[in-house]
Image (tube, rainbow, N blue to C red):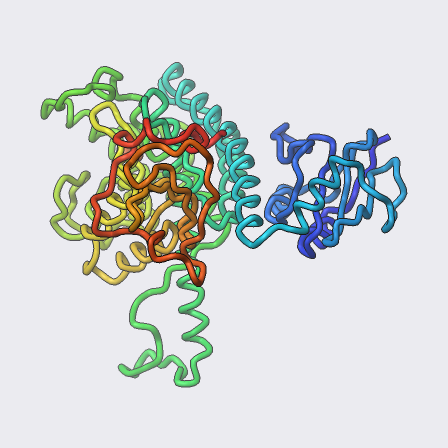
Length: 469
Ligand SMILES: [Fe+2]
Ligand SMILES: [Fe+2]
């Protein structure tokens, strides 16, 4: 009979440097795979996510393939068959993972975490993709109806996953060579980017609010006194259930596109003014009609669907619906627009190739910097979420090598060409450029023009080409 271990005990062991492998796949009540049976968990993030999904005990297989080790590599539990023993020796396979654990550098641990998160992200995204595909197909077939409860349940799991990930931008789903699944990938990516921005925004504002409340200079609020300590602007902070509705809105923001003929959506040439008018309607007319038809009554979703192409500042060009009042557009709909722009710019579509992520961040920053204060906080949340060198960007190093950014924190990079631009014949060690003493020749050369993904695709080694490898 299989045994179990309390999730909190496991979190404690792993947070103290231990590790676990269950030897048995762990699913949630909806049948979503949360933890693969052979996976060696070295980070508490995954366990926290499992805990958040409501699971209190983790199963351990009875066939000797499960194991729990402490920070020194000692097996403290061999699963239900073996007694808990400090001195028990692990088998050869287990020993290799233990010695790996002991010798792991900080960089090694980060790479392990990235790898672990990528696998989990891939599982989550595959489920989300099936979900949005089904919802959009249902709408098409039925003329507007879809299973809201099912979509909502999937998105709350995805949002939960994104909340505990430091850098969800690392896990965006992109097809560089085709745009077949563009709308599905785009829905997931906008949900990912938008949720990350909202989470960061909440943190920044919580810090500001607590700073204000704890300030010794803060005086009691007196509405009749002009110099009162009350903040001049209205604070925005979103509760958990509101954030869930907002994530759902991000996921469904382009739902109205289902009603736009494919011949227009997939047209490679320039759209005629009439065709462009039809496309525009996906936000302010077709999308809200679907929301209404399903009796959703959720203002967060409706506002996001309706206003995600609105102007963020007065007279911003190419925006719709254009009522000239950006101050009335809800903050989260503005966040959706930024997330939408970033994903559209960095993905291949039927009418253009993907842009380099650094170019997209710079372009968005240039467009919205020095506008109203609230927009600056959204922009700050976006830049803080994604970093100056977003994951997936291609950069030049000062020694003329090209490198792929794995993670914006650092940044963490993998060089993939030599100084002459030829693909490396081996897999080099990733480098953390943020580490003290990093060789100057390996720093990023910001004077060289950046490359778009398609331009360097043939030079990229296979292990960098897709998220699922
Ligand atoms: Fe849209
Ligand atoms: Fe969109």
